[in-house]
Image 1 (tube, rainbow, N blue to C red):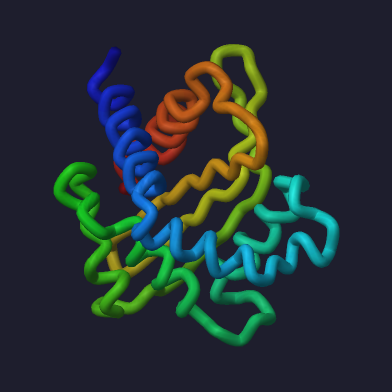
Image 2: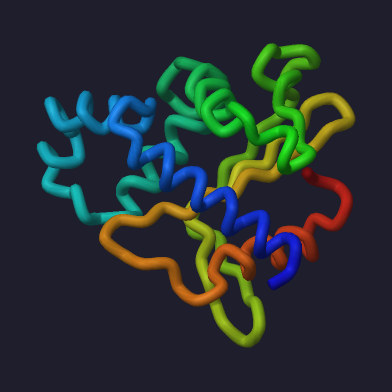
Length: 167
């Protein structure tokens, strides 16, 4: 296994441990959502692409929700906790707003071609802040298992396509 594959596996294992903790933030959020779930009301609980559409809409400060970068910053805070030392990517300036976020591009269902296979990245977020550029890839899973090397393929694609421009 390569270093990047080991790193990805470690992150997934840590996320699983946090989610298994009954007092963790994801678990508390899940309890709140069990009280009212808009996806249940709309009868789209198992429709992954609908979930991705809502997430992409919320995370895009240019959308019609009128909350600007608030949802994006909350998301950045949630992925930043404890991860900057491992990944080498420091999101502190984005979260604190210094320098401000200049532009955000949110993409959905982006097709990538890797090793003669076509995959779709559920959500990718490209953020520019001053001279810094960040790329966040979200793989949304509802009742499905990871396909073989899926996250590794995404990482390889991103490193190839964006080279040194984006962290």
